[in-house]
Image 1 (tube, rainbow, N blue to C red):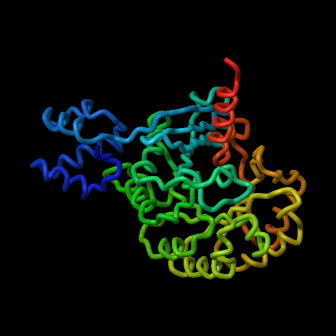
Image 2: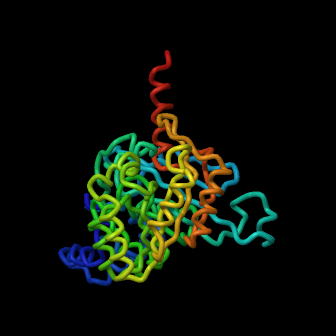
Image 3: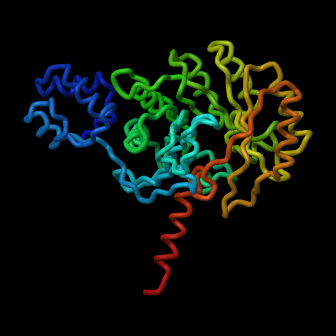
Length: 368
């Protein structure tokens, strides 16, 4: 069956033309899928009954099955483990950001009754990840396959059904989004197309581990999507260990691509830096990072590591985190410390799948 989420609007029109349907039917279907968030053809009331029947017979709207879903104690983070049509699983996270402190909504303790300035969905682009970063649960699990454009978009639609309107999308979940640039970009185009999901391009951020060709291609694209780079180390020796892709695209080549991106787009680049105890958090490493980024239109996002049971890496103590941040700020590098959300529900990339898998193994091993 055809998953309509995999089709561009032009492809949808071509399909309907083969069925002798007028082109405007494609726009009607798009509205039902991406704006009304409908996943059942029978609910598309302005379509002819015969067309609805044919769609039901030959097409589908890919809705992943929820394997498990967890919520943080404050209700601000929701993470879902989703099963795809072939049984493979991916993770998607919804993060709610309340309005500014002092607003009357914050007096209400339940998240459902609050007002939120941002509703951000973090989505995956692959089942597993081929990069193999040793501190990342997804990297430890290995790589299985790429997602389709529809499977990427379906994650946003899933969260939108329970928390509309979605205000931001970050492509920072499982996988390296630039490994299959065309697939990721088609999904982004679906999300920003006004007649479809209609999200502003500047509200989407793509995070790469340093896939240089993808950075170079993104620089040539017209959509003003944000770029983030998972850096995690200020020198090649350590980054080879933490981000194995660095062996293919070392820092010199990566920073050359970043400078080219900045020259073409004039858009700020975010560098993500996960702080690990006694690994990449020393003062001299902070100074080396500041020197490497000096003069660039950039921002550093410091992330206290979400540790995993299978990894020897542990998070940097808070006092050292603040010292690292201060060194960067004093050097003139715009720096923020990421707000920690969802640690108690395994919200880090790949962690819910890991936890769920361990629970399943225990259940299977338990005596009847």
